[in-house]
Length: 455
Image (cartoon, rainbow, N blue to C red):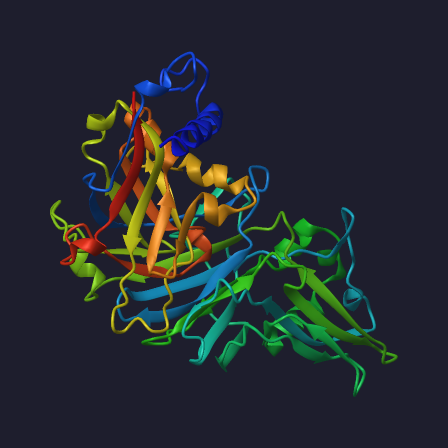
């Protein structure tokens, strides 16, 4: 203890000076607490209650004036043998290319130019793609009939009207999310350029003719162009069992609608309609848990089966964790508080890796969740994994630092109910199965590992 005790005091003084004001009665210092008044202890038997809950929607778009936009969007429709069917589709505006703040007029809209082809370019994000990507997929592209409005918010349960016939389709493709592509330079037979891994969807003749026949005034201003083309909708076709879902980098400089054209003299050219920061990109998620393993564990009439817990991104499944007797611990000073969950590998899980990060939020009220301060503080460090944790360890456990939040719970300034879900859930379809509070093996049940001081 002669070696350990001063180190604990030093760590406490540094950590708590950042978290509490100097008038805070729980602050520690030589003028407040004598060293021999402290009683340091540890427990991992704090009572936890838990259940899972469906979430109807998540925020997928917010105006650029409020904060940065999501960049990666899921697209796919597959059946997970444990979690059931999941489908993700994408709505997006596109813009005229710009130089500074001025639109760049496409030369193909001038007299004497003819469009050869129109291709939608969608670069993959391999890290956000999920599941079995070896199965064939299909994505149809539809033209938006209803405009997307750059209002403050859009949620994943919203839909928008589209024209009934697709303007392009990618049929029976197997996603290659890892390998870059070499593309032949137009007008050459042996000159290529290296491009990022991406999906190319050729637009049909009817849409190509629509652009070719459009009056040049549609291409002089963005609002004029939106009157011609409000945007597109990416709709995946169902894959069936054991499939996967791809992620596209929708706000990437490579993404957009590329037009290839030639002049009457044979000069070749191309023009990219990009997705700019001010453009609306949003998603629609649907999930169906009917007849699944998960359905058996959803609360019925307030009663929950808590032997297994489930967490999933997208709209997904939340894990609700409560510390019911937190006020019995109110005179404790938290040195460290860590949630521990054991990952279970069900038989049919093979293609579906555990979620790469679990985020913890406070349940402020029935409709409001706020990410806990331990998560946000860790974002400002150079070692998020060490400070916060929340990732699957090699021993198949998640360990999540909630020290700051736990102190707030004990002080009565934060709710004792927490919501756990996949971090960046609108960008991820990943999921995980966890041992619950009544799992048959007590060693694998969730724990709150609490190191504390009495004073």
